[in-house]
Image 1: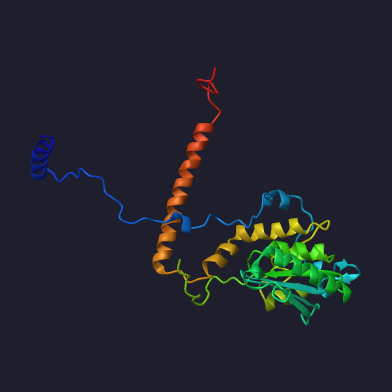
Image 2: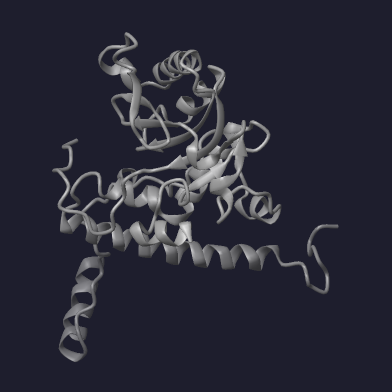
Length: 191
Length: 96
């Protein structure tokens, strides 16, 4: 009965104006929102640094024209040995070099005895950091500047581990390779 | 002079760019500050996006999704401001 009335109305309106759709359009595609991660602000853990308040304090946090000649332990900043940390998803590699960049010794989570997936954990990074810190102190590198490259689980714990091992860290530098017009990256992983 | 030479050789010289000095032996805070700056500048995002190739259809979808999200966020912000506004004749109507 009802449909009959509707049909007659539709027939009349069709001829007069245009067709009226009585059904709502149905989406055929589903968009998986979970595949787009939330905005990454570089914050891990519960402590959040308010950038503006830190910058307002006007401490000498960032390098300036003169900072190359600042003395740390009697050595100018530019002549301090460097501890390079290469962080990847699967491993963390530490390299201690002199100020010119000549490699003195190196250590990785794999060398430390962690195998396979255990290499890529933050615990592995921390233990390796502590071991290379003690080795560095034995060889006379007490005060270092740290340069971190790459993202991974061991990023924070690696630097923390160096400090726990007794090294005196002067500065933390990020050297992650990022390009805004890179060559075509590798194929995405299939989920 | 030294800095100028360094900048001529490389626009982002190491230990000048993306560097934070550690204050009061507080390494954790320095790391967090570096990470925060990287996040704010969109470097982490770019790193994540260029790790694997993003097919054009994925780019389109991502951009559309970002647009929708921005519109929603803007409207929601406006709505929240409207609901939370307090310069009314009676600040909290219905709450006696």
